[in-house]
Length: 472
Image (cartoon, rainbow, N blue to C red; front, side, top):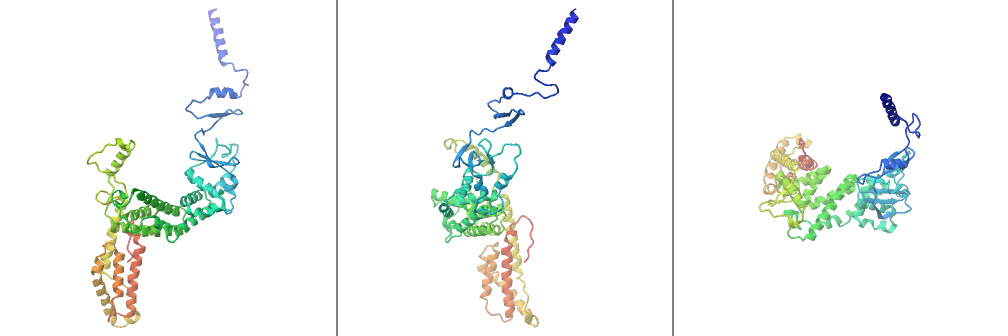
């Protein structure tokens, strides 16, 4: 009797557990109501909010856009496309971006994106909760880019005076493949920097107006002027990087020419040119920049102690200036591009190695040229007579004499081009030579100029990392 009771109790228990719900059909997945889903999937305060598709009980993640703000200038109520740049929402007209009259028939990145099929997913850019997210630009840059689509003709005519505006337009246009807009912005910048006198040269200090002293600032300039100098220098480097990025050769050539002129005023500009040449692989700038630093600056590479001091000062800077203690005898952290207490320009190890390589190669080249004058082909009339030996002897004696004069030796050992140019001047003043044919004299002159040209063209190779063979 007890066993039967236990069996009935077990059967009743199993039945109550395994029996299917009357609302669920046999062999089919259970369906849940939106109310049940909300109870089961209710997120915590630290998790993102979810919405549910009642047809399939699928969970679609929605980001929290409460922290995002609408741009005060380019969020139009009747706009058809919403972009999110960092924390700022822009709502603009798709037709402006795709059918602008200044654009060619070539498609841009936005036009291609708008034409892609979306499938069953919600189309991006239709609401603040689901915008098209753009990465890599600031709201200010994208706002300037949109300005070019909504600006009135009088505003566009004055755009050349606003250099930061044109820089942002060119950079964003390049990124999203607005070729015509990019070309217009770069050409406008080129016209601006190519004015006479150039605003770039006028904005930076004239030659010999100051020296690059400790902390990178001259003692005879005010702090406001120092801040202006830094801003103008950053503007120049930004323009060079932009011209290189967009492959705008006329603008890049003009800017490099301006920077070469500024290098004579301070080692600061020479260091900037040297660093940009390495960063962007600018062959036309590397040789002259490294040579300028080599001839006019005492350099020292940044040490491990400098790096540790920088980390220490970075930690200290997180507190207020009043709480940072003064430690006697503790040297200041030295940044690359600054001058230390001993008036030495701080450079990187890679730059130091290139300078050492350049010094060795240039001095070796001069030593070979000093002992062996450039060769030239004698004229046919000279070679047909006994004068060829006397012609060659006169040339060798001239070369040996002029390579040892004070005007040549006064130039640095690495100034091979300068020394050769001085020899060329002496050659022009040489006068008549009884044992040297007239045509041979012209050939010798051309030989000097040819060596100068080869060294100038190959100057970047003297400061390269690999081994380069000389061709002279």
